[in-house]
Amino acid sequence: MGVYDDIVDFLSDELPYSAKTFLARRRNPSDSTETWNYFSYSYENGFVALVEAIYGKVEGHEHLLPPLYMLGRQSMELSLKAAIAEFPPYTKIPPLLDGHNLPKLFEHLCQQIRAMDYFNDSEWTWKVRELVEHIHQFDPKGDRFRYPQGLDGMKYRHVDITFTELVKAHGLITVFADASADELHLEKGIPLEQRP
Image (cartoon, rainbow, N blue to C red; front, side):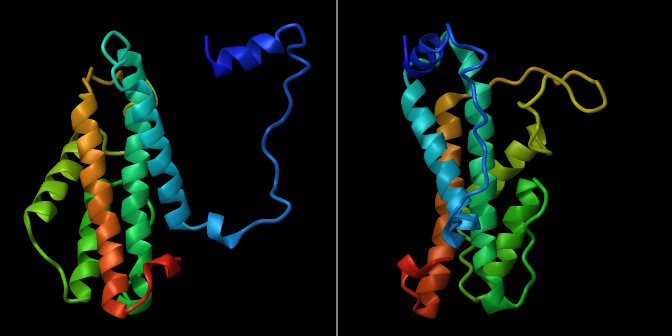
């Protein structure tokens, strides 16, 4: 069937005793794995891996779309936050890194870019703004597809997810965020491989 089933089936005679704890403090922690860029990179690659794994299998298996969306949304949020985190040493504007409000994060990134005097208010900017506002309209807190209802007990209204458009939106938003940070490093003459 698959790797998951192989692992669980192999241990089925020994379950539940064969299952062990799986989280532990790192013995040799690395500062490079506890950065906004690392988390952004990890989630982006996880999203891409899931896209590749389910491409062509979504029709008739729409239950795969909410987890894909959640991973993609988290990746988009982290890409904005990772880009924002690069600017304060140069702009002296405190970074806004809390919360899940994508339009607020996007506008803060734009504020940081403007402070560097290389803001390009172009079609890319307009389209990213439109997409983050679209996502926010349906999922303002980043929890719309995590649960069937809100904390108030009210069921969420049904929302369809379009696979290809989600992938395109993810690509556009993450590329915009990454390019913003790359441009900062080019402006400052810092080699890209030295990004924190």
